[in-house]
Length: 238
Image 1 (spheres, rainbow, N blue to C red):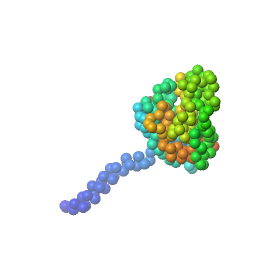
Image 2: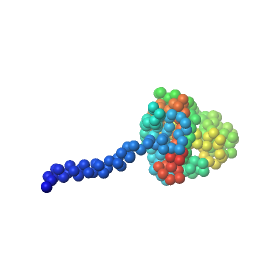
Image 3: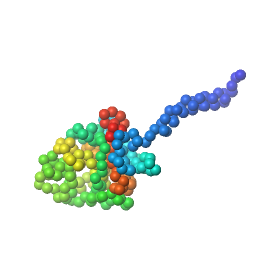
Image 4: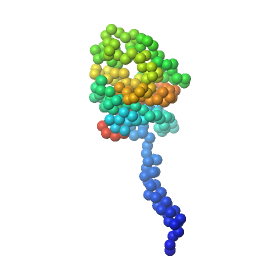
């Protein structure tokens, strides 16, 4: 029996939907990114900063929270990374303009501007005497200093107030922070976008940074996981 053109088209469409079904279901059923990480830090809030590969300077920041025993996306934003991409955090070298891959805590927030409305995270206001010491010879290596001590050279420190756009609002990323290793790197933050790629930080648009500070809750032990979609610095390793 000869089928009408309309019948043939319907059959073809049905066959196509059946063929695509398993793949579509697989994509839909894929567990959320936090469930695929080796560790999420033990809290109920998590920020992921994922780049396509280690040479990438752009990617995505997503913030997640546990709801009813499951991870759910709370927000997402385009992100920028180091000018030379990403590097394994445990072997990263200072001055390489790479963003350190790994899982880190978020010690506190800071900014040149007042904290966004709704912020409950510990927030430190930047003033004219606020510096971040990156001097490997200083006892204050990888620490906020105010005022800058003589043992931390000005040319080896960031005068925070000088970065009016980037440090309008920021979160300290706990890379090399608790027990600093000299030469590994200092001053790694999640902050507002500047003109382009960062010197090693993760950055997002100003609106997204304000949303994150309004959302992040110190009682929920938030962490940030930084990494790539695949390869040696894959975010799922952390």
